[in-house]
Length: 155
Image (cartoon, rainbow, N blue to C red):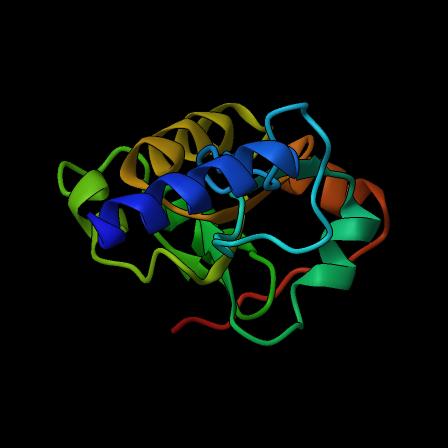
């Protein structure tokens, strides 16, 4: 009986001070009135998917835990690619399996020739559970158009 009384008392105190906390898919914690609380009870990072211009892409590719993926064909890659990029040919039959084997928590910078294949790749990566994917808007064409260089060194 004493335990039951304590549980009821604690429940009433919680209701009296503003209700219960709601944490929704890693979003900010809120009380029952919808007020954002200063500290989340659960700290879950939110996924980040972004499409950026060549300058922002260039500024991000050198950061820690960053992987550059060129999703063009090997022939296109050999003609010139962003230095440090890995070639993951969008048209290969094992493309999805290769993506799925990557670290889902790394930061991926994705590009293709014009943006079509990279856009489809970002969609696939979202479905596979990747947390941070940045796409080069306009593809390698925008990179070159902005005056950035390409490498022809392989692997």
